[in-house]
Image 1 (cartoon, rainbow, N blue to C red):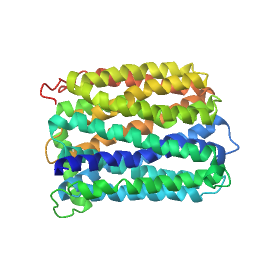
Image 2: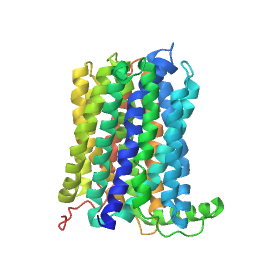
Image 3: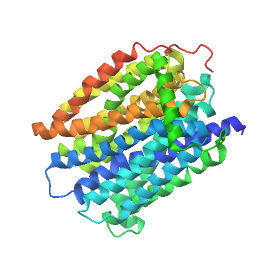
Length: 416
């Protein structure tokens, strides 16, 4: 395998690695276990609010730190070590969740928050590495490959988790509680094992001296000046902040929302699994679509679908409808995420990828700060969790309107 291709596969397989956390823990197990085991004896809307606060707090930490971390990593050429370090934090927090006893929702929230910080901060440097492993003409496809492998890997990990949790005796475990604890440990191991190809195959890059934080702040201020001079990048970041709110909130809160409506957790887990396996081929197709019609146009198609999904979810009242929604979301979710990353990479100046992607992730994380809390607070205030899902519809629409002003969305005629 050529060095360049090996670097691409090593980079893309990290999406396979960390998607086990995103799917099994963040979207699947944690909302259920948090509500049923760690945060018991409270009204459903209170449990939803607590979960929203945990997600938002972790997002806020990364949102504040990401641009500074990117500045230090860009200047020192240490993107890969930063990625591995934060990934290790995520793995440790995930594994330690297996030790939290029933009723200790604060301990569970702190460990989950730490794991989420590790997961999201590592992604700042993972996204920035896209510019190193793929030339511009291949980034739509390579970015989509990462998301596609993430859907497949996350889906397979989640399938294994469901098999163990639904029938623990077959796997030599005494009960469901033991199966859940084993699942947290298995996700940590999965994450570690499939991070190894990135460590081995992705070049470290040109390593300069490590910078202290004061120099990082100086470089960050310099990047802010450069960012203001890049109007298209600024407009994209505003659009991204608006529309990714809806995307991330649907990902993180869907299972909890379904449980709040009284839908069975087993059916909701299966629906989440459907999203993963639909998302695998759909993300690959979306990467080709981005090459044919341009990433901006393909993103806009996905946003129209997302706006419809949030309105539809307001009136949902059966697992069958949740399954249908899972298929629809799977068709566009990975494509919107992948092409957002590749479109922004075209607007980033050389040598500033981690810094600019720090701001990219900052916008995404501030969206995740607002979305879950907004959804939880709307349900708590009105006494009906259904009203929360409509809180993000306007943001998706507004993001699409701002995205129309961003250039660089044309098709690539030389796409292979």
